[in-house]
Length: 259
Ligand code: FPP
Image 1 (cartoon, rainbow, N blue to C red):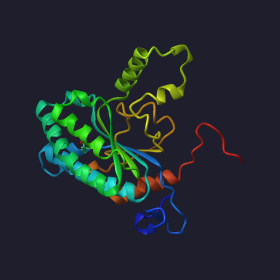
Image 2 (image 1 turned 180 degrees about the vertical axis):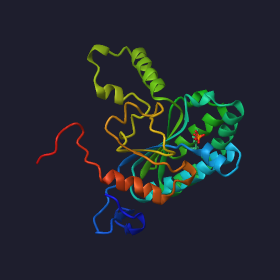
Image 3 (image 1 turned 45 degrees about the vertical axis):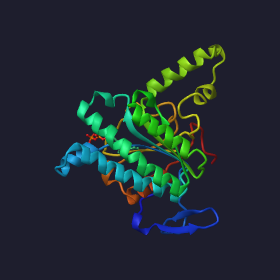
């Protein structure tokens, strides 16, 4: 389905407190319930605009605020974003510190948006390797938004899929789990993402065709959308393009469609 996003009609559905999207032929556009995003390209955006890298990351935060609100508005139930990976520790100390300062400041903005839009904030990854001031802010946000129920917004902080799987196995082992009987559900129910629906749609910005150790277990059947757009330039319209592409996919989960 190729369509001009400017032709999308956005109509309020007051009963369900969301906005419905229709294409130019008045067909409803399906909204993926669970969306995950690899936010890539902040550095390239900074370079392109002759800015220091920190300002690229700041622009990335601003883009995220817009997409979070839009996702909630159109009825996405789970939004999960990759903000800091277990591999990001390889960056320079000064970039890591400036990211931590930015995250700390920016979590205040997230709190504001979460409370305004009834969003529950959660974190995946081992946040306890972060500075205390930062993980305490994460804990505060979890607590303050815990009763919100319109959308779950999960931030991957010090997250890596392989690390998550290893932590999960170790956790089960300390609980004397009987591994001879293990099922897929046992693993899913013990990953950091236990309260998040597996992504229907995975978006990666900035054109790289890789998964970078993000949600490897969870994306087994996700539809993948890769765009060349740099994350700070990812607008609502770019988000709609990803959703339109998702609508054109034939999801069979390994089975066959009835003729
Ligand atoms: C990748 O860009 C992006 C990051 C490492 C950080 C992403 C974080 C944010 C946008 C902020 C999210 C904040 C919160 C609190 C949720 P890059 O530096 O790898 O870009 P490049 O590949 O172009 O150099």
